[in-house]
Length: 316
Image (cartoon, rainbow, N blue to C red):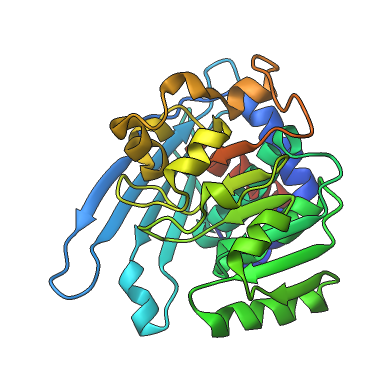
């Protein structure tokens, strides 16, 4: 069994190629059972979550892979100066069960999340989108600008985070990477000026307000993944044409569950999933003035696609 570290995994997952492979993967599909959620209670810090995410290729595939990602999400790690998410990916031969690779799951998670957001933006954002508002400055958020730059002419990035020091550090890194990056001083103004608003946080209270959005904006929510987490308020959801990475998001994401429960939106407002977009089975953006929203909770299919790419890269 091959042991593949974070650097090797990242080198194998260039965004242009990864976005292309994800588009093919979502179009073809795979067996992707509902992921397991387990709450790890804490008396002092916020509760943690254990996620188990399996997926395997359909029987008709020439070479079938099976993979499972083991994820621990610990919001309390911010007080320990540690990452909030840790994961490992095990890739196997689907026919024999033989374990093929043990891959750094943090890299797979972060890069496939950013690339999935970019794939959604490929269908849903305006083609001339150049101004990005990035809400969050963690590992996933830090990768979003480069992923989006693979499909849109992103030049300006405004960064907001509840941790101002972390946001400042990310601004410096983005400027070194060729972006025109700056710290957000007025969040309402920056939301209104952005072509794409991307949030990658673990927030439980909405950060983005619908009244702040300008016509034509694409909103990308990729941080929250449990029923009690919110990155956008009801007004955002009411103004937007909504898409999801997978249908199960309606059962997992507070950004959808809560406004559906209170009647702020109906399921009719959710036009389709990423699979539908990749198969041309639903309508994408229809006008330059339309506000679109992509809500992602994470997909074991995307993990499997990324893991296959990583394993292929070390096979020579």
